[in-house]
Image 1 (cartoon, rainbow, N blue to C red):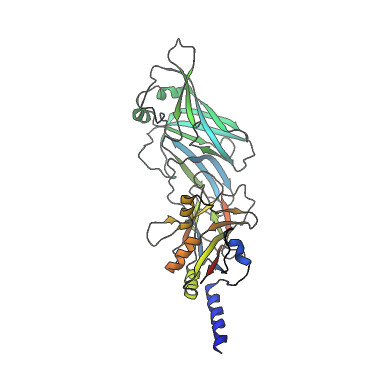
Image 2 (cartoon, rainbow, N blue to C red):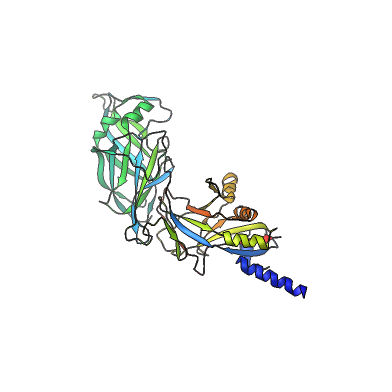
Amino acid sequence: MKKLLFPVACLLLIAVVGCTDEESGLGMNLVDGNTLYNGQQATLTANSALSIREDSLTTTNFSFGCIGNYQDATFGRVSATLYTQIALDEHTGSINMAENIIDSVVLTLVKDHTYPDSTATYNFHFEVMHLAEPLLTDTVYYSCDTLAVDPTAKYFDQTVTVAPTDSVVRLKLDNSISTILNQTGSAEDFITATKGLRIRITDAGDDGMLGINFKATNTCITVYHRYSADDTVDATYPFLLGNGTSHFIHFEHNYTSSVTGGADSIDGTAALYIEPLAGYNLLISFDSAVRAFVAAHPTAVLHHAELLLPVTSPTTPSLPDRILAVAKRDSANDVYTDDLMMDITSMARFDGTYDASRNCYRLRVTQHLQGLLRAGVDHGTLLVLNSRRSSAARAIINGLSATDHPRIEFIYTE
């Protein structure tokens, strides 16, 4: 009789946990390719999930960014505007250009991508204006920040065609910008005097996003000048706009008539919305399942675990490149999961990318889940887009009520 009661009790515990344990080959595709474990497979189902608005996203001095406008029926409309200093080369301590004759000034942006269609030709209407206040080097700017512009100092206001094969976008600025570039002084004095520029794509042209590579040396302002009126040969002088300058991007959302409605949080029972450019992140919790599994398997050792996020609409223009997991703590110090930090330091392979064969994002969370089981509690995991500052690509994840719902699948022994 005791032999019969024991397996019955185990089955009841498994039902409470909400996972399945069985010794089969079903979970072997979860295991790192070089190692197979004679363990058991289990699945944890999330007990809560939310789409939550991003309320503080720093955008200062990142190597990649974007400008432009994009809209769809689900997420509404988003606009991205660049604010940047004009700076001397980091190895140049001063400048003496007050007496030089500037013939032309060209602003060059190295293209990283276009969205939503990388194969399309866009007619973007660019606007470049002088800032009325300096962009400060020692200040951290957020996606909600803006700086005032001088309405009388517009250096570019034209439509430019950007083809799929174009690697750079060149804007020949109005020569009135010479008044702020003809400076003499230190590098710090030059930044203070020039204040900076606001660069955006207006509604007068096509909707779309232009991704910019700020770390490229060709993202710059090139001045073509002569040393005197008698000089017949143009010299060139490059000013920095990317690395070596302070810059930030302002994102502005309009959720009018959108599915999300711009709510601060959206229950994830039906669907989960993850959106970049200070849009929506995901907060998911497995607390009930973690507590129940720990009660049933207090000595379990994990060998491999993956968080699976099935995608609702795989036909969106372009899915995000990668989803990252941030561990929520009982303190205010949230950190990237141990699995992600291990990959950054060891340069090992990290999943977090979309698997078309399974129509889901796969995030390795072995160390993260082991930590949750050790603590016996889950304060939640925040999911953010890797390219949330530089690309408008977004995704809709299946909600908790879907048959193919978000879950953690893992292999363990005890």
